Image (tube, rainbow, N blue to C red; front, side, top):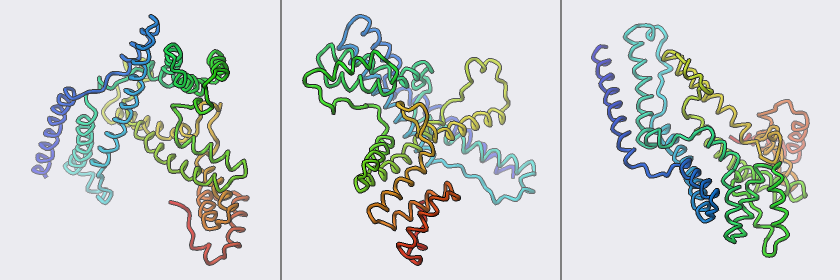
Length: 360
């Protein structure tokens, strides 16, 4: 037992040393410009009327933040796949109570943490290089760069880009009266097309869903189906991304870190519970749209609700049954959906319908 502990401890120390070296190496290879610096340069250029400078800095700030988000997603996804948790659920509780065995389990647990952390350090680079302030995150969340950009584009006669930037900002800030007036003005200008009013920050899953619902409401079920199906695929991609982005630094909620004195396992628990809470909130995040005061209710199940009706309307009872059964996984006692399922089953035939299961 002692030999095994020593071997595992030596391995952990080697991982820690390698992580430190990777930290230094990543710092030399870091090539993403800081979004906060670029945003500050953009606002300074705006203040002095340097419109090309505003465009250059704000566009780079948006690209930098998007690249940073993509880097976090790529690193966290890859490191989670390369170093998954390897707990041993088959270990008898009686063995785990022994001091030597307990120590071995602890080392295995923290060994997994250290391997994952080393992987993230190699991939992400030094934390300081990709740490954005809460204030800056709020500015990007409010789509503030597009407010500066729409003025700058207009000043340098890039009307199409000015319209897109103005519309993008307004979608995220529907109560902004000045931007509404700007958009009204753009609509009166010669050369401006309806297609120019596009949301540059649109979420693919939400765009596809809204388009599918609109087509369904206009009694075009055949055209609605591919968009609703695409919305589902995009939703699951967005959900994975949202959950991965939750695995960031611990949020001390203001200056509470000055008084925070949790021990090792309390600190791990506090952080992990915060991550789980964030991941749980992804359901609400993905169901939200800036133009709505509240998120879509039962957003994911509603995809299957629309799909089962759409497939029924085009005579595809197989898919209608599949989507109805999937919806019932969320709401098994839904009376209307159970009635729909009974009708589709009667139309298709009991034997064939029974072989159709819900989607995975």
